[in-house]
Image 1: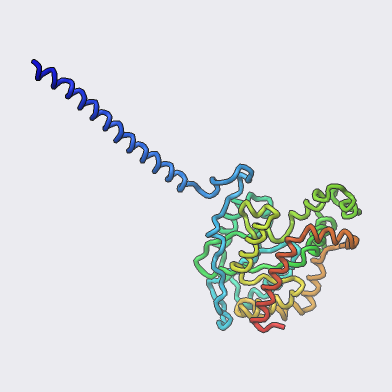
Image 2 (image 1 turned 60 degrees about the vertical axis):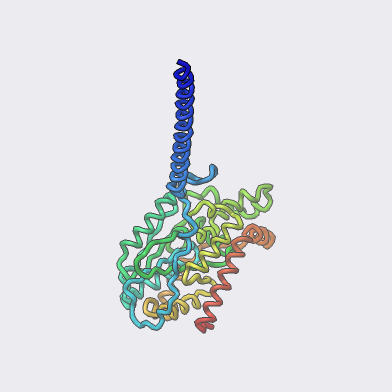
Length: 343
């Protein structure tokens, strides 16, 4: 009887110990499963789901690794024929001579063997996510070789052939004034935007200069600045900040094959001809013709007036980031001109 009474407590103790070990083992396993599940959930999120609270929920965030797509800077100038698999995507900046370049390329379509010369416009009212997919579809369906005029901010594109990005900018203040008066008065082809009539006082610039809220007056038009268009469609590109302009510079220099300056439009045309002669042969000669000059005069903004010198000084100060970007692009453009021996 004594042996049996001693054995029973030991057996209960062993059962209790086994039960505790089982609980500890199950706890470890459960913890590992939760950890793996959490990591998998984070890794599985799309970039658009991982946004800060102040971002527009409609805007996609494009990963930095997708920003710099290879630019076609290999020497195809020695190829005296059209490269059939090439698509030139012309990301336009409004009021920077884009219609003139499109006019020239269109008139040389047959001569230079373009499969397609077309324009995708009126994208500004589309959601940024939709604009990206629309431009991609536009490129995918183009008949190559293609020259595609695209009116939107830069978007990185997938392409199985040679994809070449080009653009053209101008002095920020001159573009600002051209955009303002174009929407107020139109040009020889397009009329003014009558829906904005109430915003155009004759003393608009003087009024803003006297106002205590210059940011309101100038801020509305500074939304039409140049460098955010190169920055792209990520959330940071809607901000007037250092990171916005640095990203814009990086994309302009590493992704675009040519970004020209409107003030040197003739040299821009010569650079395109020399760099890609099979596609742009005769561009500069066509620009010199009287019918082209007549077209250029028609697309010039009407009734453009210059503000007072003190207002111009204020506007340039407000546009200092755009002027920094303009100077950067101008330097890059001049380096290309030197490399191609264009004087």
